[in-house]
Image (cartoon, rainbow, N blue to C red; front, side, top):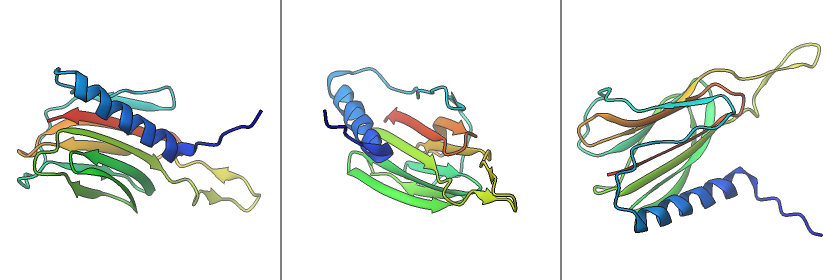
Length: 151
């Protein structure tokens, strides 16, 4: 029997397709995000962020990360480090984002042990008025954050 190795980006792509497909048959407002048992937590918040006129995705992290952002204009892969924002389409529709902390640069001590990256990475979806409409965080080493919102 042949084994298939999908990887994290394959899983993220499948999740985006499922979210888009579920939005096509559902008329309810999807303002929630899911969490799993790998050190993630989620919450909905009315926190205010600076208004830019366009909805956006904001990543807040101390280290490196990579991810994908999907909205009505399509899906794109991004990578970076620290805090960055990514503008969404004018009418974004269903927004689905998946980010993972990059642990490829973990600190190695003199005795060869690796220090895991337990810093917090937070991903926010921010509406056109600057309000955080969905957010999720992880402090797990190589942790994954998945969050979505329907505009």
